[in-house]
Length: 273
Image (cartoon, rainbow, N blue to C red; front, top):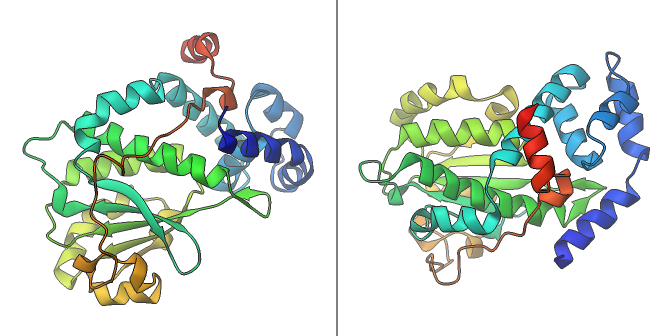
């Protein structure tokens, strides 16, 4: 077990009952906390709470969404297999984690200038993005804020942009369904007025929370309001000389199945429900 995993499990034990049960009873009237918790007894309460928050307290919706989420989790290969499957895309450095915002949120970057819609396999590209997201999730879980997992900043770097709308829509759908309450803020930059028409195509697929967390910045200099120059790449008018290096910048994500009660046997059981 990794050190991060130990921290997460320790934090989860410390938060057992308490905040989660009180919050549930205040928000939900259609299903009791014991009924909800009993259905997902091997899962962490902080994960259940994220889905409750996403559903704004409706336990019926949260239960349905969390059940679907577990089936999605069970369908994923191991992290080692996932990395192997997505290696060709991971090496391109389209999506990676680097730096922090002024408020301390870790940053996930999507460098759209590396998009290659004419040659990429959309399933492999999606798997690569999910692999990075699962790594980010583990980092967030290892550093709880007021007993709750932290959130991240997502920067869509449109310098030298190559549009790949099908990939955007596929990733947005999976992120919203399976990583609720993880996004702190999303910056799309540079986003001149003409880009707004393209964004309007994506907007109907975004939840209200995602839309409210998304900020379109007309030029790269506006990013300096939120991120220090030292964490903004030079291509975006910052001072960070960082360039993605496939030899050291592909993250290593730990296995997570035990946190959801999804060992091999449990995964089969979940998929058969």
